[in-house]
Image (cartoon, rainbow, N blue to C red; front, top):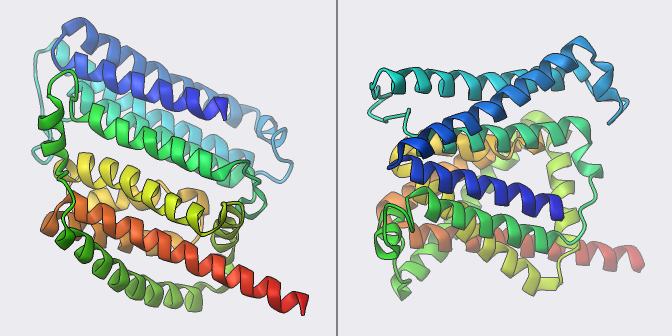
Length: 326
């Protein structure tokens, strides 16, 4: 728990530093050096593991040490190369763009670096341990902490408190006070999304078979530890707010629907299963909702969808317990 809080605290600190880097030269270079250090550390660790793959076996004897080492190297390169290039361009006072995005800006590099680290850490967890066997203590607390960090990261990422006021930051994210129309639209979209992802999930299961079982078991383990239906609803609301503010609020206006949906799916790589296909479709659906009806509607859609999935899973587990006890 403490490690999780510290990790998110460091990430938020980097985002805040990057915002100052948008205005101050010293903060910009300090941001570059901080991000470069993170990339070099990952790269060095990966190289060491490639040379001595037995290092990874200490965590799990069945782990593919070379696979984890390769992921560390890839993570390090994905961070180090763009940061180093940005530093060169900054020295030459140039600001190149990629598809219209000024990627050398500290705030964009910080967002990229943190996403790569988040995805890499999820991948490492999935490789080092069987996700179905992972035991999580106090999952609701962890969910609340993570999604509070996501929401704060979204606000800081668009410049709240440094480059934008509260009202300007909320407007940039696309947030608005929820109306009855948005709530009912969100509920309707969630039901439609439940049907669509259910069909796609059934097709994926038909094609890949048991590959979907690990992610289902992991989700059921979390739901079984929540304090009843109220806990499931709170989880749904928290994930709806946190993930939508970060992905559809902060990232999508810059990266677009397809790229954001890909990042949304790949950030759930801890499943290491075809379930990611369903998550990608879910991201596209939520991205469309955000563009057509606004972020608040997307939040309600995501919250209702996650709540319904959780309630159905909770009901299924309770019925299973009743039938096994008869």
